[in-house]
Each structure stands twice: as structure tokens, then as C-alpha cells.
Length: 289
Image (cartoon, rainbow, N blue to C red; front, side, top):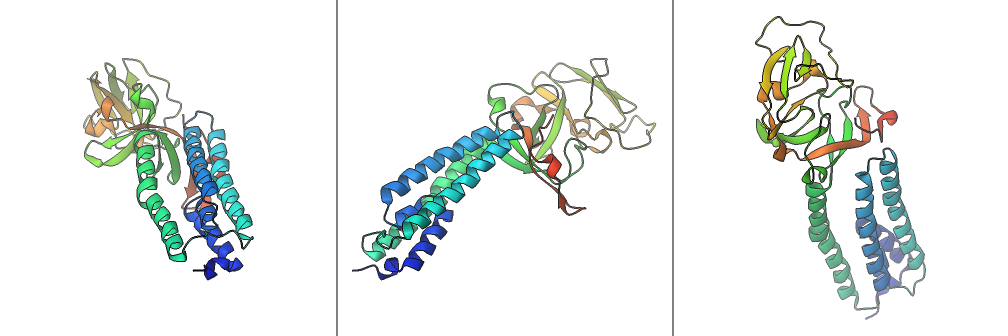
């Protein structure tokens, strides 16, 4: 049976380009270039993993720029390649049309329902994940509307260090993830007097911290202003928001277990100022310290 639809040059071109965006390499298969399509799919898969790995490298903003170039390059090259192949009406899937279209749909379903979710799950659980900042607890380091990349692999080989901005399950509700800064480690003694943090009896350098509330409440009942001294258990860390006067952190709900820390914040890949309704271009790719 002759595939009349496939012989239609316009349909062939549009179909090849469109399905290339659904699954890279599928447009080439649609045009009968099965081996080429499979090779492109595999190479794109490898390139995607490479881009994700580059995102974890401590070279901002170049890690974001290079990863973006890779992804944009793939989604430009592959559809254009499919378009050029589809311009020749002889380049069609030379099998029974029904079988051909079932093959295309089957490959797309396999990719979208099995392969892609499995890879996404592995990447999110073990390598890189994206987060959005919903509150001002980490001002000025992180602003509301910042979108972050976090390294989920780093703490598989090491424990959090002083100053790391970490992601962990909120101890009160583990279904939620919190982002705070590790200010004290196991064995440290921490105390807060009149809003000032003291670590092992000394005031540490905190260039990232701010105190935006103008007054000090003269009460020992508010841990924002008076806390401790307490000693951090060896298996835990003490975390605080950089916006010390407006952060719900370890002062209120206690220590964070080291083995519950999921990731360390790497850098910003997007930032949207909701109040001004504009992109904060100067923050994109900014390293998080």
C-alpha cells in the first residue's frame, strides 16, 4: 500500500519538524532514516546528561550558559536536520503506513512515559534539581522569585560545611523542602544575644546576614533575639536564614540531621521580580555564596 500522506511533501516536512520537538530523532525516523534517528536520539541523550553535569560545576555563570547553549543547539539542529531530510519526497518511512505510524507513536510513548520520566527521576534524586524561592527568609542572598539549581550529589561524599546553603525536609512537615544556611555544625555551641550570633563564644564573620527589623525585643522568650547557648549534636547542623529577623529556622524547630540534608544550592538560572513584573537579568547565573 502506498503511503500517500507520506508522499505529500508539505505534510512530510511539517510532521518531521513537529515530532522532532516531542522526541529528538523521531523526525528522522519519520522520514525513513531510522539509523540516523536512533544515533541522534542517543547522542542527544548523552549531550543532555553532559549539560546537566556542567550545571553542577562551580563555574557560574558559564555552567548555565554552556548548558543552555547545548540544549538550544540540540533543539535547533535536530528539527532543521529533519526538515532538510523531509524536503526530499523520497525520504519516507517505507513500510505499511499503519505500521509506520504505530511505530512512531510507540517510540514517542516509550520515550515520554518510560524513558524520560525514569531519567528525570534519577537526575532529580541524585544529581540536579530546580527550586523556586517563595519567601524572603534568605534575603539578600536569595530573593523571592529566584529560581535555583541545587547539587544533590555532593553530600553523598561529604558532610555540609560552614556557610553552605542547603536543602532539607522541613522537620515539622517533611513533605516540604526548606532552604537555609548551615551556621553551626556538630559539636559547636551556638548562642544569640540581642540578635547577634555567637559560635563557640565568638562572633563569626557573616557578610551575608542582615537584620532588617529596627528594634530588639527585650524578652528571653523570642529566639530571634535571644537563644541558647546550646550545643549542636554531632549528627546534626544548625541552620538559619540570612534574613535573621524574618526567618523560621533552627531557632524555632531545632537541629537538622546531617543525613537528611538533600542538596547544596549552586547558582541561579532565572529570577523574576513579581512586584516590578520584570526579569532580574543581573542575577541569572549568579553564584550562591
